[in-house]
Image (cartoon, rainbow, N blue to C red; front, side):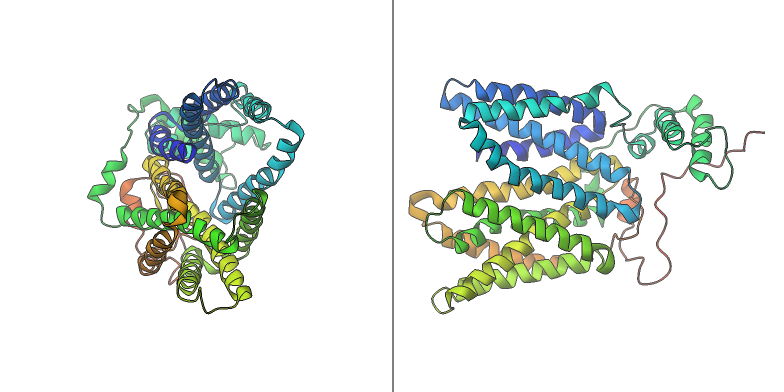
Length: 417
């Protein structure tokens, strides 16, 4: 619980830091903290000290993962956002599957923790090479820093083998860089925004609230499905590998359907399957055969994994760039809150398990109605400002062509002679 609560706090606090200090700054700072705290865990002299370090270490890992997720999404165009998010999810599953093998080789938890800190420290190479992990140009433009954005865009152009001095119509990205070069001299002070600004919107706050609610349900109900799969005390690796394997299947399912059907229909389908499986498990515990219970548990766990991953991607696509870090941090933090509530059901001989299952099954049915209020984000550009996010109320696929994925609009400027 302490580690999961650390992830929750890290998502909320460092997510807001991504909007104030930048994606790369939080990424590097979180890596430094995670390396130091991970090494300190291996040297912890008492159990209370270990709990405190686990809490802080979870927060640092959350900031590192969140900053990486947001920066990666903002560097992708609409056709590739889902692909790169799914690829990152598969690498995460691969690390989950390899961890028991590393533990088997280490044979000691302190040595295992030290190796984990060493691997985290190797990622600090990104600090020495900013070109490998640049600041998000989209965030720089949205916060009024065109000069810094110009340098990064020109570096992208040079790395792509194009001539930065060429501003022809075929190379529209370089034309944008030229405009930024002209605007950089008189750029105003950076304008940072708070997540509290969403209170004054009509649509944006509702989208974030619904997706955070879905993430909370997925995090909490997952333990109920795992418990139904392993009613007796299992070996530690059984639910571990089962959850990782189903997460990989859910990730591949999103890759095949997310762009074909759209984000909202897939989210609606996953929430429906998750809610129905949970209700059938509650109602048919004493009447359904064992193979049916097992099938419903696997299906519900698979749906919860898919809905959790899609809720994060959906939230990142509908929240504005100026508050995307804090908004996505709240959505992810809600999921960790649900996961942290699961161990409470184990207290006092699992007497809280049934109530835990009933509450989250009811929430799943309520979330099914809320998902209908979400817009469709497939093929849409990422909203830059709070006003842009508040205009995402209808799907562009119902009529007309979806708008292109563009950087914040710039005032017209004359072309250099």
